[in-house]
Length: 116
Image (cartoon, rainbow, N blue to C red; front, side, top):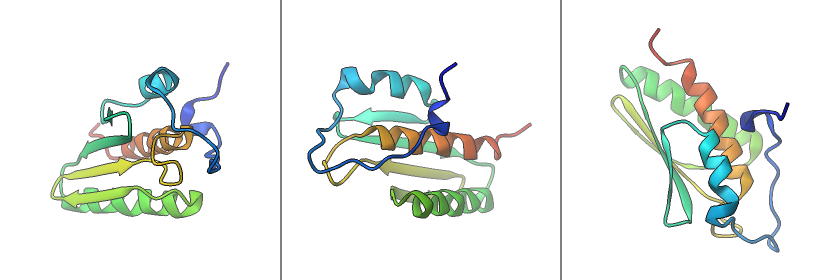
């Protein structure tokens, strides 16, 4: 059985790598939650809903810690009851598998905040 995307290594690319094409990233995108979409074949955008500001803030902190651990930093937009995330690999100015691995890990973190 193949590992879940969130369990795969978040490997950095090199400057010789090319951004993923739609046919290359389509399977990765299918593994992500509803929060995510690819915009202009360039970056991922995700939006997560929360019951209140505190949960959104805590989630923001957790994905910030994840970003520091993996040295792969998204743009994060925090507001009451919502966190927006934009992510791409700056070194290649486009999408890399690591972006999808990070998004899958964020989905996993968000599960902790889902209402029961």
